[in-house]
Length: 321
Ligand SMILES: [Zn+2]
Image (cartoon, rainbow, N blue to C red; front, side, top):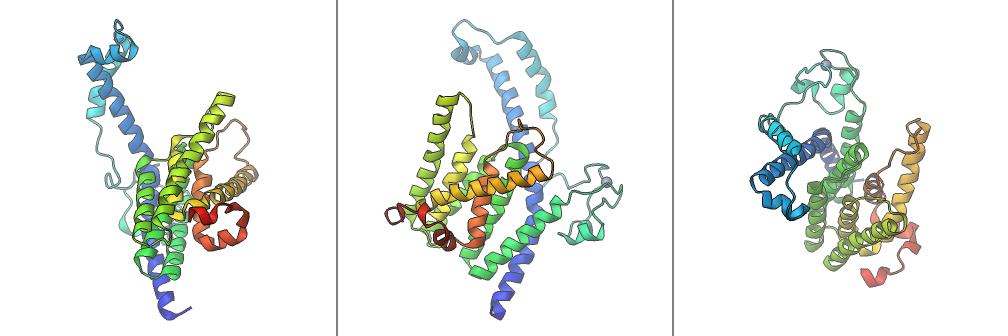
């Protein structure tokens, strides 16, 4: 390891700690922002179908009218939605969930503040989830890895962004069973751009086919499963996430990604079981965390080692490269 390699890793690591702190905000707020958008849209659509009855009859038949109760509900909800205070990734400032204490700058230093505060709110002493410093530490470690492996280059920055987006998708899906579109699309576009610029080492055609086959394969599994069992096994977010991973790693990696994701699923399942969190068998486990985890595993051990470890997962390797 050269001096400059160590310097790049350290600098990227510090940046990663700061980014990790921001990811905590994204992971908590993005689902809330999504729910707010959906509610706002639902009320706006009900209001507009009230003003334009043709919209309602277009869906429910020529003579049908929106039920009075729905109209009344929309009327009631509209002002409440309009008066919602601003809520996005920038505002309002972070506060303690228990007492509302505004988190000051020196209480917001990644990992260190958690240690100095002994994992408790500075004001009300309610314990803070260790997940926050853990996300910061993992993001810092993965950024350091990218800086160490690729230096402070566009390639290093791109793979660091890959790590950050996957950490978000992993935890958001774990918490809410949703994979936000903006994050999936950002991941997909960055993968395609990285291939086009030659930064990810994947040919553009392999990246495009990776995205296409990634989406199609899970789409087929989903509809096949639904035809046979009448149930929905996963969601459209999963197709988009595998499409994005296909764009990053190339079409020939898709089978390996699925293999690694089932391994990740087994590890997460066993961990949760031992932690006593899987007492109820009915709790649906999202597939997204396994896919995101597989992407992170591929980043950590390196795509080339994946190819060496599971060579049988690359049957069409030469065709799709
Ligand atoms: Zn507090």
